[in-house]
Image (cartoon, rainbow, N blue to C red; front, top):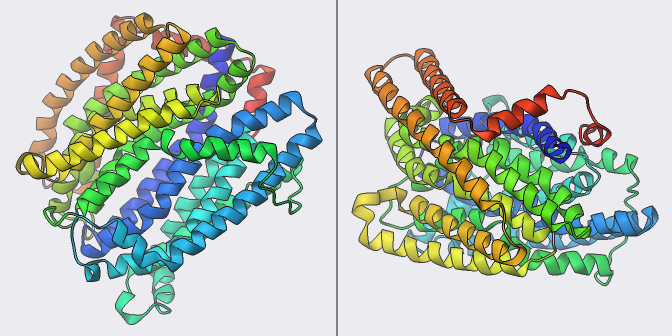
Length: 544
């Protein structure tokens, strides 16, 4: 119970800031869609933003933390404090030099980068805006990489709150730059052909990235980091992290790579205009669920599983993973069905403003249907890959990820050529979801064969109860959907209130059904909440 309480309370700290970030992220995306809609400029901005943002997903929410934390935890456990901080300082400056080079090359060769990601359709001239915007935003890859490393250092010291809060600053920066008082002066320095709000939004991305790095530096300094320049490509710890990261970029971030593959196929000439933006917005709606808890739990369990693996406590590691899978599935399975049933009203209420029209809503809702179907798999991969990384095994997740990526590409090609009339702009989303399920189950069975039973019987029993409760909730959602449809054309405030009432009713139905079926997860959470005394380990986790 102590470890469960530690995971849930750590996840709670992270979730508070992650939910705040997702809310600000929604407001950011609403401002973007309000200003740009699903126009060609919107597609150019989203494409240019997603290229450096892919590095954020791979590094910031995956590979760097997953590879650095086990190594740094080993230094903290087996070496002196001075040696540990020397290693952290060296990897900080080495990463800074490497990432600065990547950012410089990405900006200089912006046209070639954009061409690489638009090979399935469209002329070069169509993406001139994307080339210009990508040149502005690519240095964000450097900034977010350094912010991710700072986050990994603080997470290793059981500081979760401050690092989790940095994404809020990023979103607030973009929101600020979306207002006319800011973006009109910013646009004046751009060439006349490129003077539109997208230029100011790109500038906001850079400012937000810088803030994410700067706010974490004082916290690292207080804990022992001195930032003395110390570049080293030969340090054993630096080389170990580098060796782990090369395959780790694929292993942890396969879902994000698959999302980007979707973006590439969305540039196809067969796709309707605005497909890139529709996929992006659908992805963002889904992340309101995925990011609020699944990423939080994955972040909280990695240091714990790393300590368990270091102590050769495989039984503890298996129990930690099984517990995390059950808790996250309890949230993501009903959320997936809820998003599928209520996709139209949700997208309409959240984004149908300004240049984001009813046609934009229909295009986005169609993509959301297929993305939502894969939500449990996306969350599952976030949880199971760190189980391999905690044992410093990068090879297995990479092999599974490579198979998943190949499956995604093949499915995208088949859907685009054979089923496009049925799936439309949702075909990339369906391919990505199916590929992620393949990735999760492959990793699950490999891990089970390696370390023995993972408590699968208990997990599947839990999933069965959650599934039944979800079906009951889905039926209630479908019945209430007609009420929402009948309310079409009503003012925004009324539609928002109605949708909130339907979602609240659906949650109540699910929790009621889960309670009647005696779902274990409800009782575990209640049991932990009843123990309000904060233990020393938990107090450390709450410091940030």
